[in-house]
Image (tube, rainbow, N blue to C red; front, side, top):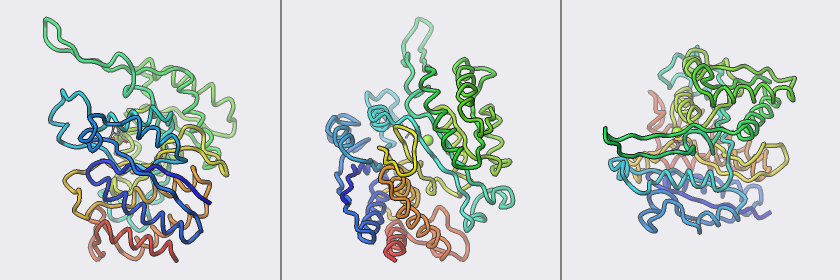
Length: 365
Ligand code: IPM
Ligand code: MG
């Protein structure tokens, strides 16, 4: 079977980890007889350097004609020191999410049993934590208008807007309920309804959608309380649905349960994932471009490799292949191999390429 994907390595460690994801994907292809056709494109800082735009029409068209998109990372400190820049690498990622209609960002958080002692948190608190965030990805503060900076006689001002329509809320909350149905049937909807009007609408719509899912228990939680609960009692959660900015912040926090940002995968989808139904999506690690580590063969490729597993499952309906890949990651960790970010005493430190080889080797069987 021929399967097509667009590959956008991006900036910093993006290309380093993407190369390993492709290596592992090819191992899946040769073991199971799939032919993956890869088309490479530019996004982020590398695209700005080359074309002046963070996302070109060509790259967007290439992504649209593929069955899935694999993305490394975007961002470069070159632009962080210039808040006045006309275009930024992150614009490319946001334009991709919006342009491809990827409103549902799934971010599983899992404490790997073998890494339970490698985090800054107490093993007895985090052991067994296994939940999934559903982050709204094409609305809220990131995209709301007005969004601008201007001068007044009393100095400069700036504004961002947190806007949501009931349709946008409904479709993302539905993804949360659908996932909860297939898990422990508990959905936490996170908002700031004690202060924000957009959150009050969010809460109302969540309650209305709940009527269609009598088997799922819906709980509303304020975002500040949620951030506390994530480190206080992470096993409490099953499925968490929330708006764009809250989801961005909470998932970085939650990644610490897994020991490193380098462990967490994500899928950005244009609809509800369903077993046996292939759905277009973009897959990327939740970590950033870590420019200081770029090109040093240091970065942990596990997050993007686990993102490939999500891609196999959701965009190619290859659940068995996804399972084999996830088990390969588990086995390599169990054998004691670690990249620098999850290194612990008595373990074997490896670089990006070796970690990719080890996982690809397990996949090959
Ligand atoms: C993420 C990242 C992005 C976001 C950045 C790079 C724009 O932090 O995917 O979580 O804020 O969504
Ligand atoms: Mg983030």
